[in-house]
Length: 487
Image (spheres, rainbow, N blue to C red):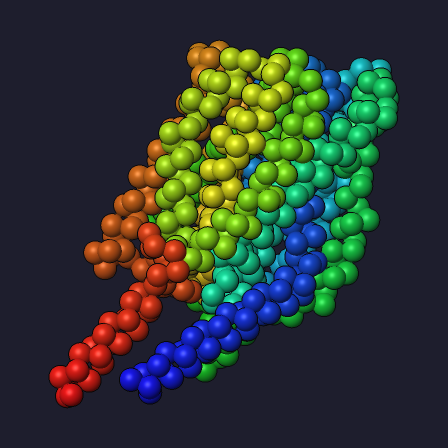
């Protein structure tokens, strides 16, 4: 019995030591990866800037058409899957680091130049400015599409096993910080400048501000080393006979052929999150502002603050119960809350408190739950040598087809139903719930491998209870029975 107690104590000490080591490795990783996070923040900053300044862009470039300005917003999303493929192949062949450098430069250039374009409407306006704006947004979409797969791959591969979900959850936590900063900046500018000054030149400042921070992020990314998982994959591949260049190029797309079901699952799983996030974080603010809501940018700051605070907690929880559990919970909440929350919000659009409860809590919690697990859920679907391409396809398909169309669809749907935007959210939430459920059923039947990095926890209903733990407990019980029978 004494030896048994000593064994339990040693096991507990080992577990505590392992947890402490994992936490220290996590914090070291987050400090080391600050250039990735800064670049990621600038990526989402551009989307937020366009959304929060939609009213000024509508007047200066789109002839006052709300539908046209949201079509312009969606232009960059068209190119995201293409960027995901091009940069994904490059990241899986040449490494994640060089791709993050190239994508950052293109992204910063496209964002900064949007603030330098002459207006297309009014005195001195030129039609080519509108075409240039659309081209810049297309370039920005290509670069963002490539950035996403490489950055998420680096975070997932470098993070300690115990904290992979918390580490990758930082990808969207940083996105929420970007939206919050943007909303605060626009709120500050509108408080300082007159409406005429904002319409004339004030709207340009947030776009131009990205340039110095982009250079800092580029400088920092030059010092980041390649992930050990990728280096090991390259070493393993170098042992095998070297095929021709054509064969090597075509082999990069084997992930699409071999894992086409995984690509479809990842895109469908992220669809509800994409619809909810882009409808609630960009379009809804502009919609309420047009209906006379006071301080809409302050509402945007408050909404994003909720997401910034809650997403790390849900990231930690995902490491206890598994990413599939979190994704299914978030998709289900998106499905059931989409319509009623929008109905409540739109019934009293000038009430700030109601708007905050709806956008910050009613929509905010499912956004945070999905965001905390979406990155690792998609990264888990693919092996190392096809991971960047796989993530680039899954996330970008969802973001482009669903998220990119969210503003336009929400605006047009109001012509057919007062609850159109809510129906849009709930419908995609239902698809995500169904897709994740089918994936889990296939995994349980042994027909699909959905976790290539960490098989457990994946879909657990009891926090902290993994199959490994269950095995240890079973072994302990068996040993106890043996000892009793021998006695």
